[in-house]
Image (cartoon, rainbow, N blue to C red):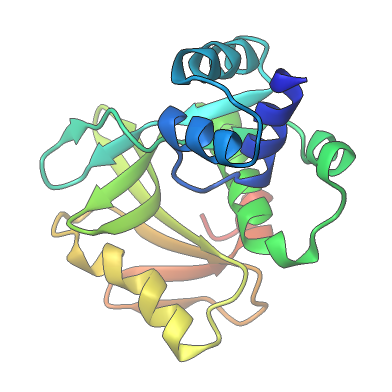
Length: 191
């Protein structure tokens, strides 16, 4: 069934930039021919039924919304496990999905930030406040920390910038970029 195949593809790629063309091309190359318009209809149906959410990209420098390479998040990770089984290597994407849903629950409009060739996991905007978020399972590795800091360091405004991680280390500050434990953040500690 094509709808199930599209759903499996999106569930398997939560937190990854996707286009309807990429979905159609990948499925067609896997032997399940589908056109872009059908993928669009299926994605719209999944969003209208609140099975998935779409995060639109936002150009942080140009202050404009982008029309390509959205990210999708599933309303219930249990549904993803049901279709795909457990994937222990997906901790980062699952954590990103959890943070996205929590930001929605808190009432924010949530976007995926783009700054030059880098990506900010989430940008939340209110009339007088913007907050930038990076989400990573761990940043104890120096390379990972640098990768997560890089897009936030390119942003020149003075709005809050957070790295949310599962690391149980004390809160840290990198020139105004706060690293905090995501579990504390989820329950309202260290916001």
